[in-house]
Amino acid sequence: MLRMLSWRLCALVPSIVLLSFVVFLALHLIPGDPAVAYLSASQLPITEEAIERVTIELGLDRTVWEQYASWVSSALMMDFGTSYMTGEPVIEEFLFYFPATVELSFWAFLIVILAVIGLGSASAYYRKTWVDYSSRLFSIVGASLPSFWLGFLLLYVFSMTLGIFPSGNRGTVAHYVLPVLTLAIPYIAIYSRLFRTSLLEVEKLPWMSHARARGCRRKRSWLKFQLRHGVLALLPVLGIVMGYLLAGTFIVENIFSWPGVGRYMMNAIVQRDYPVIQFYILVIACLFLLINLIVDLLQAWLDPRQRHQKGGVKHV
Image (cartoon, rainbow, N blue to C red; front, side, top):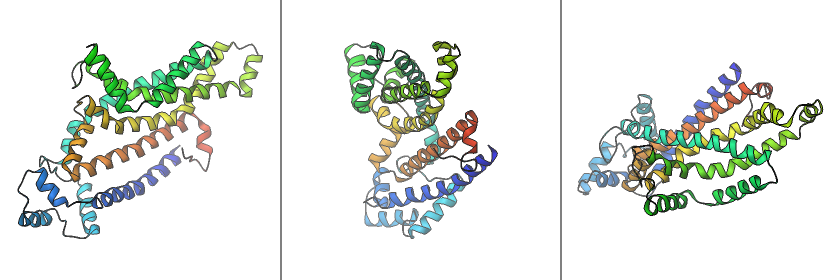
């Protein structure tokens, strides 16, 4: 386990370095002059003198390698630049909005876990019944709906038409219902069927037949063996889902006026606030890497067989 942790941590460093360069280079390849974007976002007059002055201030007159080296050295000191829109440090503004995004993603992730396990288990246990067919119908419909369309549909039905839930902002528990459901439903629809398949595959294993032959009742074997192994197979997917939820709030936060990082990022894109965009992409990508590392370690801890594959390391 320690060997696996050491190997993955060592592999994480070059991944982050390469990722930071790709993000930095990609933003520099975007058409447009960052100096003009800075003046526009700051609501300053755009003149030749102003563009030249800002170009020098931002270090845009240097080569890409020099700019990248300067940005990395500043990033190591936790200085990721200042926002063009507000003039405030990017990391401070990000940390101001990030808790709202994490909170929204956490509740959506919790709903996804409970619903996937519950719906997938019921569908597998009562397979080829109305429960299974209803679950399949929900999965087809839920997986087919784009998140932005689902958000507008829930907003129209439950807020504008029925008036049950508020249309936006963050406050009471009622404000969480629609955005959380918008985030969770597509993942519930997709992964409940995957969990059902995992459970049915476990039921076909030889040792399950042996347990039933020795008189172990189906309900007991289901709770003691099948659910545990089914969740273990689902674990890597749930880790990826958490990353997608953090990044997927981008659309949902704008639909429901949720004061999180996604909405902040949308404003940054409109204003072409490059430091904010760059930092957001880098953080989300690093979160994916970190979540993947945690899932690998957790899976190895729950399933000792993972620790003995490929010299103690297994890629998922």
